[in-house]
Length: 232
Image (tube, rainbow, N blue to C red; front, side, top):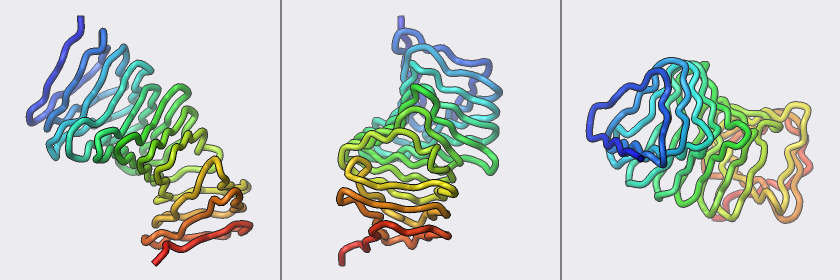
């Protein structure tokens, strides 16, 4: 059988791991879910962010979201995954799907990895990554917005499956020794307060790097590309 845990206010702590059986649900409401100590959230289930301003998942130490877990948004406030220490590895699905935003953020020195099989999706909402990160799974953008913040390198971008939508570079993309290519498959990206560092930038197939309203930086880049300003 499955179970539903529904939060209202305050929060609860998980230690020693948590296994979701038969599609069980944690509906956070206005609650913090605190994951303390090295652990895996596994099995087959769902964590749903709620409508309150306190709705969040707080991780400490080394945390893994297993392949059968879906974390998503269903109400009307920003949901945060906050890495307070150590690292977070995602093998499941983190999906912004209800018109608002999911943020992956955290303390200095923490990291976020989307592992093989993991899915990061902006599909009806906005997904923001604000920690050093890498992607060995897939990033999905479906007529929605993803903000690529924190710091990452070109090889670590991995696979992006895009249908329309918006990709904003808001963090530091270290392109040292690499070529960052935008084409008809990748579509255009917005330089939205972020930095592209070194290496080469090339564009083709109608794709461009758009200089967005937030001032971005090209740091030692070799330019073989089109950079376009936002139309007046």
